[in-house]
Length: 284
Image (cartoon, rainbow, N blue to C red; front, side, top):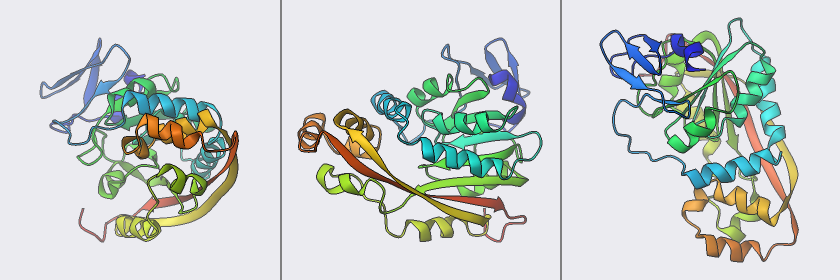
């Protein structure tokens, strides 16, 4: 799929256009990037300080998302993209993980091309086979993205950090940024028992501050519903997120064993749509 989106990509070293030759991406300045046998390409401009999700975390996320528990979230993200669907749609997801959300959006936008970016090679391997119209790129979103200016019609940030200046740079003036963030009610039934990372109660205010000068909000909708989760579902849910780094497998298993056979757990998020501001009123 990389050959179908190469016109949207840029060399991470010099910003030049890229072309595909056999299994290598090349720029006019002589920089080259080999495509891995799994179908992804690394466009890191140097060593990243961020390690990204491990193979175990990605596997847990696949198990949980394949179970359909977050399907209403994916459907809501897809609806947000369809609401603003310009011609020649190209969708970029940053911190794309397994590519489930990107795939849902591409299904809702026939003919659209997609790029999933993640710093984790384990994620990139899964992204490369997430959808026939999705390409997989390893990159660090805190540096300049290897994407050409104004190349995308939609950018997705799902449970992921945001580099607002970069997202605005790669988004078309008529494009849409879709951001999904958890509320403080998300997974509330499990937070104390399993020692999950709590959602910052000031998260909404911090999101607004980060977007200021780069984007203006079009709208914001809440999605909240109960999930019925088995012990194995809960284990995958914990193992796929940041709490997996703070709670060992034995401790996790012991605490999950205290739950009833099936637990009702709240999914609660906010989905916000933004349009880019030009010129920016904040330094980028």
